[in-house]
Image (tube, rainbow, N blue to C red; front, side):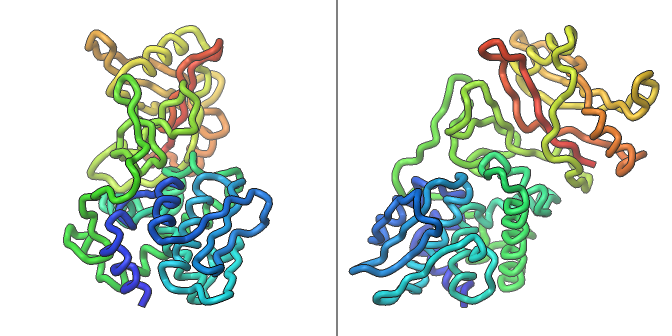
Length: 348
């Protein structure tokens, strides 16, 4: 039944479940639906209710991702016809994980707004389908509650698997189905807010608005931040995420600082993680080597620093003898007297 509702909503609103929706997209959609929106940072729980028409009241003092989930959830109540005369449906975080049909079904709409099925299909086709990997993609959009964030990613994967059970999973093999196919997106809302900076760095509302491997900045990021959408560091191998967000240690050393500055200013960047068992200070030491193309087109390679000692020890325990790969996540350009920094994920 819910599957049929999703197909019907996608037919009427082609943007739904095709692209990651921003808060602004959802506000515009709410207006199309004729629902009144009340922003109230003081209310403890958001809600949807009827007062001469649908009304949505939301708490805006939440992380970007949670606001999208909650507003999408309340829009789900409107779309699925849950509101009746004088009815009130209060929202709490627990509603995102409830199994009763109204709250569950509305939450599915919210999840599809934040993480469209097309993006999960792309991840699965690349051999990446776990909640850790999904969390890694969305980490910048969430707040500080890591347990809640991970639960949200686990629930989204569960919803995805349920959908595949209904549609048969043809989309994963390159086929088409009504609810899953990654059809080209045709804008049907307000003009997109995505912009571009010099050097073609895009300003976007979600990591899902750029292609894997593409550089971008979220619209609330500081100007010295450059993010990189995850792209598998190797092809033809099944790999999994071991450590999500790792700082390169030792970048302030003289040679490393010069290399890191040039690396961040370069293009076609990649990382090599090189074990160094002969290191006199740490037998688990792992060098972080950068490769990049400079402004003159020259190919460059140099050490940027080290994997932090505690993480290198963990790798020695959990991945001894296995190849390890680094995937860039975030670059911090030097600014206002601060040194450059690099964060990356480790895959095995």
